[in-house]
Amino acid sequence: MRRSAAIMLAAAWLLPGPARAQDSVPVRVIRDLRNGSYVVLIRGDTMLAITQQMARQSLTLNADLAGARQEAAAKDSLLRRYEFAVQWYDSTVTRQRKLIAELDSLYRGYRDVAAGYKRLSGEPWLTFTGGLGATGKDHRPSILMGIGIRRVLLWGFLQEANAGGGVGVSLRLF
Image 1 (cartoon, helix red, strand yellow):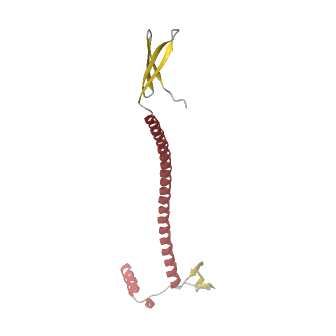
Image 2 (cartoon, rainbow, N blue to C red):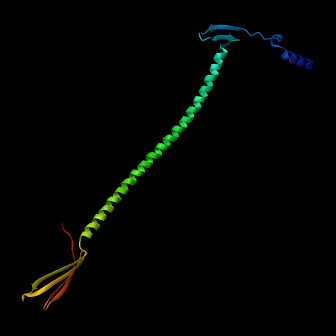
Image 3 (tube, helix red, strand yellow):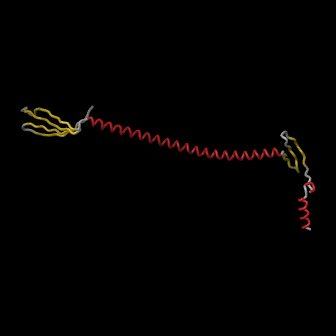
């Protein structure tokens, strides 16, 4: 019995549509909408019946929406990368400004050192100093002589009964 029922079902399934028995489902149109769709009541459920064109448009809109979401996600990812790059560039600019300030300070220091060397180069590196004078009560003549190497001075004085020497430094006051 089972085998014959299965064969009959298979044969009924293979038959063309009108030859098969169909269930009758009660459908009642509740409202006709302006866009060509209907609000219908089937077995107690309220449903929306749409045309094939509306269904295609809905599927196209869903596909467009999915594509737009993917594009938005890609653009969000790019925005995050751009924001990271901007932060990195800002920190690089900050570091460069600090380095520029340090280099400027070093440049001014070296410039001052160079100015000092130029000032020293304008001074003679070897000098001779001489003079005549008198010492004590006898007022006999004495000779004062000195040699200067840059700012270090060596002096000596000679007199008939006296002699001596000295070391000094020459400092610029003005």
